[in-house]
Length: 370
Length: 125
Image (cartoon, rainbow over all chains, first blue to last red; front, side):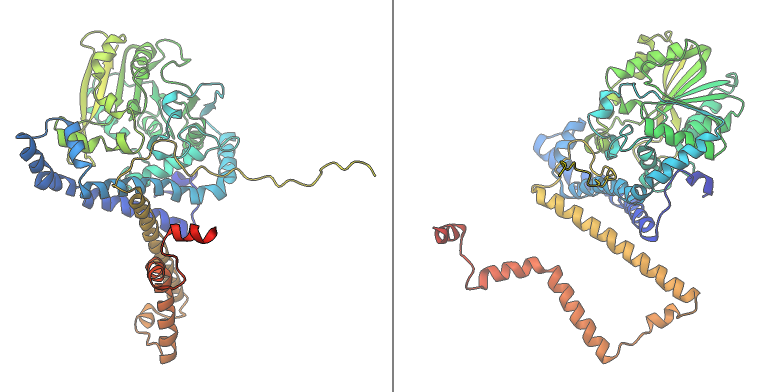
């Protein structure tokens, strides 16, 4: 891994690195070895038991959930899976806490010679869907500042991405945005080369920088509600020599003028919002698009099969991705049309990708053309 | 004497990093104590993994600096004296590790152990 990518990540002592590596290996083990056993447990004893009692297969996610959460194999996997996520942020905090002030200084230093910009709005109200519970079990969420000019949340999220997916996100942690970019280029080869791009809910900008890498002539903007994430994002991008314009904004209602962008995009944002925010963001996407512009939001998949759906809802029930099930139940394209897109100009599509789970092979993308 | 104002230098506490996520923790097992125990066991496994890696680093550095080779470690034959010291250390380690079992044993066998809470309360009056 190139060093520059680590510019905003804390140095680690021997033991701090080992502790984080343990969590990474633990998560990999749980995902590749233990989790796959869930399918067998379901087929071998949970489903037959249900069939015997009801004379039919489980038809709904809820039915599967009721049975599976009583199964000792599932209970152990689930408890360990949650614990691995708690330990993940804890092991990062071990390294981060003693270096917090140094990292803040480093961010300021990188900001002084910046080519991109950072615009923070401390008066911005942090939406309830961020303050009610800490998404991903990341203590403090995306927005909390422990000290002035804090970057902690950004560090936690950035370092967490690598441990969370045990390295599968790649050194630039851009696996998902690469999936979206590939999809865009393959499916819309004739769409004019974008000159202005907005990345919504950008967090530490691990997707935002990839858009700029792909379209170096374009002006690329990233927005998020979390100031500590944006400070980190700005410093990270500058350390990579990639100028991005970061701004603290709520994607439901931004301060950009109408028809500002050729592309309005996001990666795994909607499932962490709310029932009222979701349509607002789609409406705002429409407002911000230039005529001929395109909206593409990639998010977490669902599953029609009740058992697959149960497995995929785990984060919703266990790690505070509370809105995920409601997001999955939403027809994104229909909502986009309700919020301004012309009939037939918004579609639910899928971006094929190598996935982490046997239960899906593509990431849902809602596409809207103006 | 003039009134003394409190000028004692107050140590400014560095704000602590947040360690607990806001939200509702699910209960996985019939007894919440099992949830806690599992968390502790996983943390212990983590610490063991950390210790093994540290030992590995020590071994590699010793080899790099030509102090000794890992084969020398693998083929180390403890003397009788070292054997005795190690046996004592292991016994102590097991005592500590299995303290909870020992406590239950003591509860049953020690003559001064009260038979019940009621018995304790009675002895207080």
